[in-house]
Length: 201
Image (cartoon, rainbow, N blue to C red; front, side, top):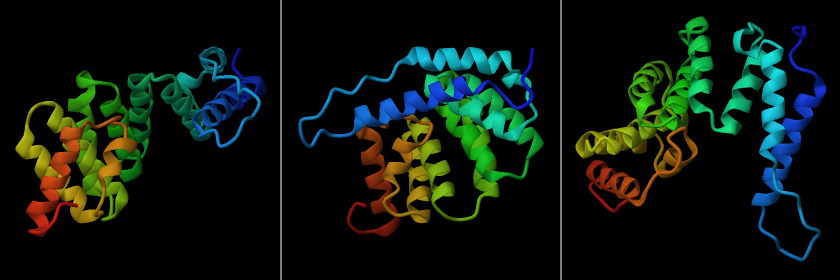
């Protein structure tokens, strides 16, 4: 049986419960306080079961699809989230933000998804206007290129990011590329010196 407007409310409540627990667990403790229950992954798995039963994988409802993508991302199922973003960009091929999200998801899915991620991010940089989103696309491309050992190409991509948004180091960390290592940060700083001819960014 498919629900007309997505999964039942308790599935959404479990996602909210997980997100609130995760946020509470990540906050620094400034003073003694009551213990906070850690986020329970089973809440997300229960919600995913309900979403799947409600037809989330093939829904045409945009809001429901985005909820499903968020749930897959919270679970770390980045390849499945990317497949859903593939559906979005087919429907909205001129949406640069959707291409960026697709590239971010493929980047986060691991090395097997990097080629598809780079292709998506190439589309994103063509469609996005200059600014932080376009800078993030370049930064994630730099991160993926660096993982393949193509350091010169990575520096070029990082330099593009820095041209668009100086100090865009955080774009590598917050994007689907996940956590960048110190070498990536050094590449960003070298790119900044190359472009500015001055001190590292």
